[in-house]
Image (cartoon, rainbow, N blue to C red; front, side):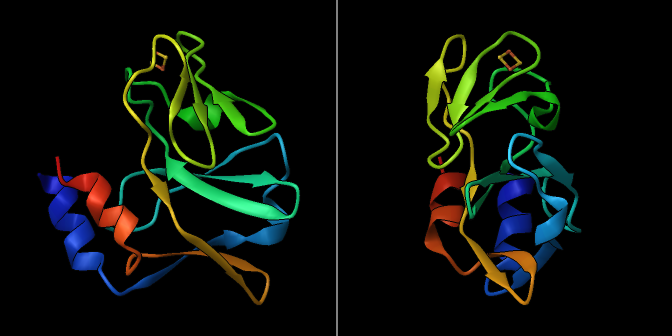
Length: 124
Ligand code: FES
């Protein structure tokens, strides 16, 4: 509920997360923008992806996990998610991970809270 309200207040806002050069493939970067949950920024090739930081199975932070290509492996129980879609791909994870639409401009990575997938994923 709190998360939904926070996201609602952020609608229409583009949020600056981090500079492109700070995100290296295989080394997810934790970011903590005001008004949003802790997030992780991943690099896959020349593309960037953002998910919630907390694993949907427990209290692990995925920034401490292991990125293997398009997959993030949780450091607690070795569950896994597809970074691009947030879908769980390895047990014990069964609940999708929140993903965010990203844009890159002038060497910085942003998420845009106007994109509907952010809101649709919050309403359960
Ligand atoms: Fe992430 Fe259990 S806390 S797999």
